[in-house]
Length: 251
Image (cartoon, rainbow, N blue to C red; front, side, top):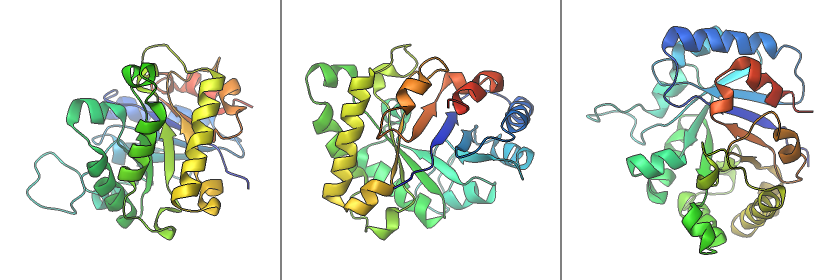
């Protein structure tokens, strides 16, 4: 079954509103004519509506970096799925390793946020991955199985048809380290099999599984050549549109 690759840029806490708009417009210009690849950028919440307006009508789609699981209420500093959708986003990152590490996002919280994203009509990009210590202790597959099981607990098959998984080994994020082709191939095959066992073979074949972890123009082609890799979640290399386009045009 054909899965359209998704190349997503996570801008993290970078770029003011005007800077984000300039970068987004430049990326949209450079992306003209790109075929058979979905493109998404995730600016900060403050820049989200500005960027959405700036790329309207282009091939570039927009996502949020996080959301809260309640629709509204006395939750100072939080943003709901409905607010994100109204700002023009189609995607939302959930459970990024930095959210897990610095802000206490547990698998249970990831599950609630995923539910909120789907209820708001957003496409959740659920991030999973092991730390260097967990890999050294040969716990990679145990950790990933738990993150998938607990992060998607209680969901029916039809509910998560739009779900995107992003495997991001924590030890390879912002470190310059990249998992080897063999490591990525092994993990993505495991994740595909896990989806088949927990949900269905059809869902496993349909679900896009991205790789994230120091993806750059010089390694993206090798990563995308792996059968079960359906795109990339890119951090630092997505901040410069002229560099990011070389990842998007990996073919």
